[in-house]
Length: 281
Image (tube, rainbow, N blue to C red; front, side):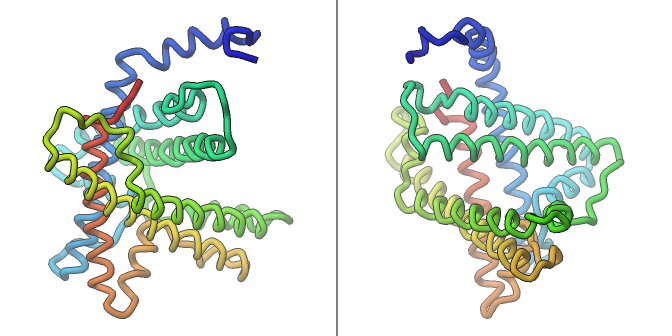
């Protein structure tokens, strides 16, 4: 059935028009910029920790806590929270309307991608809520959100299986990131035709390094989820900060941590490139 023959066509159009309003594009770009700032702080602090020049190993929540403790921190965090709302809305639009592939035909790969956008929207909604709590002074940043949710699942009869499945999915996402970094297919979504060849090459390299670093982190997070399921122990779960800490504990840990941390900084710059040049239609 084509789009125009669908009985829901009339209902979808107002929602679609609202989703693709010109202001939504600006909101989405602001979201990519906010995400980039958060990852820049995570990468910068981890780089400083690897170089033993201060800093600390933290995750995105820790990055928000770092921002709020700076001069004018609450004002800056309000701006980032607004940007994260824009990113969440854009992820929802990607999950519902799949604007990167406007044709009607579907495929298993695209359905998986759209599910991934939905999970991303949920994850960044949680991060946005944490930002609001930090602004209002009601946040508790001492806990491990991933560990808490894993513990809740563990008490159910199928909990261990679901946690293990989640771990395998996260590992699969990590592998897909590494493949994307190798293929550099993310370039198709960037509008860089009017910039110099050198800038295009920089965008490609930063994207490859940054996405590969995220892939490594996802692999570690997924592995710990699988181990938590096998050992029925939610304390084994690690988030972003825990994954970086694990890298630091390996032989040549500071070098490995420093490399991945620089990769996260590269990813943050790539997010800023997306804010300016991503194809959002």
